[in-house]
Image (cartoon, rainbow, N blue to C red; front, side):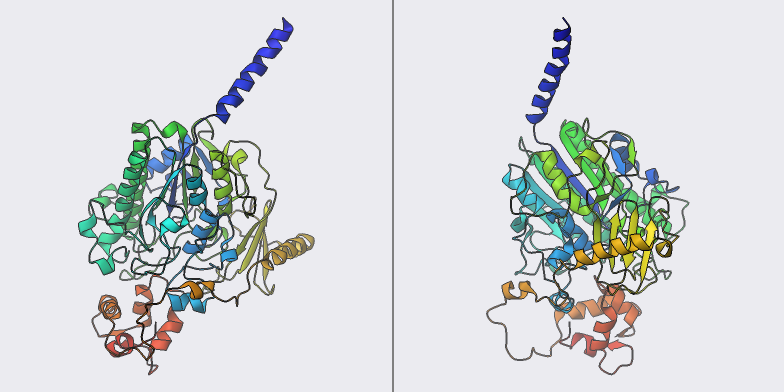
Length: 544
């Protein structure tokens, strides 16, 4: 009789393991916001912002407070997500821009499509895959040389800041997309208000059409990247809130409602139980400007008290929201304040959840953190690293290298001339640099960080994309004609806000999608050095 009682639990356990082994692979929805700060959620303590659908996601899943992205700006952060490797390994250190700017920074024009990617591995394992929203891994809609999302393993896509089908095409918002040359831009109010809506419409259609196959879909939102904009209808949610907070809150609440549409469709189709939904952001909030006419005026996101913002290796630049819902697998209503998780962990963890093996010759930088997702005790077996090669324009953007090992984060310049050490568990705001009182820890972390740095491609590496980049066969070998380039003429008219027929540095910088090297490029245009760009200097110049 005792043997029977002992056998029964073991028999049930075996049945349970068998059912898990033969369970259908989970669907995956990865929602990636843009410049959405850790503090920009009601469930993270924001007193005014309304984010009911993201709060629901947190209630029905787990909120990981120690998640960090692998770079404090867009393109490299996204590279880490889909490759499972640090973006510096692919020489993607900043936002991918035009060819000349990329070349000047030692960057390729796009992520190499031959690298291992999450969507390709899932696609090869029977998933149908889609990407809708921001791309920013190389190319523009009119760049015939840039690989399309399909080259990375996506069955369907509609994007902005990328090649191939633009997000407006085939959506009910197509009439609002503007002329073909302007589609996908975020620099007009109508585009900024509708881009994520168009992307969500594509994603919802993709989920409906997936049929019986498991699906993996990226929905990469515009909010809260500049231009932050809101319609009068959006603003009804905040009637008494003064600007610029009213517009910012309204835009994020609009995006939150789009997340709600995805959750509602999963409920409607009885897919929620076997669907992993992840919400995160590519980096911390943008720096706001006080001038109401500036494009960053409405960028008033919050870090929740964390130091630094976008472009900074302090936590405010890399510690972002990370919510995971997977019913019966990920505990509901749990707040995890201890598990150290990184953007490079997304690929190995989702593959583990889907039961997909990694290629034998592939070496991820991330680790499978499925045990942490499931609420088990998790101790990260290796450090997290950062490499920042962008601007150092403010007092929080000086760190160029960073390492987190356990509770400790060390930040340093590339030459080691400045080093700071923080206990980021007990000092989450990074207010107390304790490097001087922990010399042994500083030495060990510095050695580990420099050893990792030495595994990266050198700063002067040649650009392999140049040899692959297609050039028009009729490209002239003589200097280009001096007639105005139509795109630059249109840009001049759009950026010249005060109508004085000359661009100031501020106007020029505000017009650029990536202002990192604005001052250097401005000076190249400014032939007479008077601090202004005439129409002739800007439109008639061959400088890019």
